[in-house]
Image (cartoon, rainbow, N blue to C red; front, top):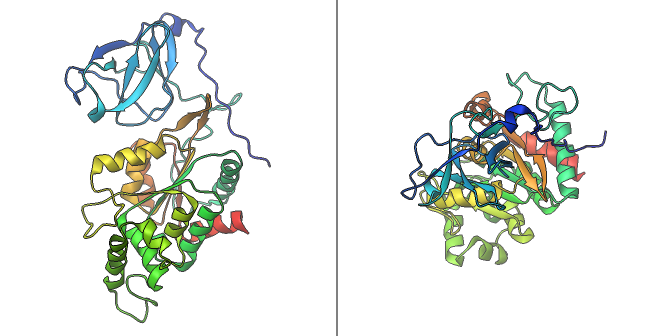
Length: 364
């Protein structure tokens, strides 16, 4: 069956509750980074704000943010802002209800068609090792083919498990080279493991896990080489790196965001050590993402999931953001929904198997 993007429909603003609703209350920020009391905190769902008697949709809505409104007549708009980015003079929407009674309305039914009773992109509860994921795989394949054909923006969050296995890292490389990926988020070691394999043919210093003892010698030699050349790009261009997804990203112009962690002993030249700068760079991509796949990187997954809206507006059209979280641990995939990102489809499976399945379905 041909994949069709769910169509979005706005609430019926001719209803009495919307007509009689007051304009949203606005209060100016007095100090940079300090929100007024009783600010309205946003969810991941589409939210509307009544400004000058007009209902305005936030182009994006994501957790842990506030709404800054422009109430200039004829220029009504809203901007979704992190608390730390508030500036003196910003007009923040005030209110704690979401039923239009304070000029704020959260709309969870926008992608329902006809007599449907639940969101077409809502999460499924109770996912476990015993869950059958065949339908999820089939849907994902269709989504990724649709994204490639229609210039979508697919972002991956990648954990180190994918770098440690020959077949899975090469599967990811093929997905990048064949145009299915536009950005990747990962940590220093995930990228460094992939580069180590591409340079030395080892993982954790081992060619074969069962015969050799772990060593970080080649891992840190890899990072040192990148620092010697001045950048990972220069290292790849030197010819030292034979294969891998990092090499593919650099050669194909796919953005690789490497966020530092407190555990890093030595970073690649591109590792972003400042947490706010890393957030900003990740958010820059998540704000234009149409499909997000998060694999075996629980902390990066939670962070990314919380900054990614359940919908985005592309060329004036509202569409869902497809979101998948994949991990062998039930705890890991369910943690994201516990934190409020309830639109992610959870798949409890080995991520190395997962990426190979996706590769086979799309590249063979």
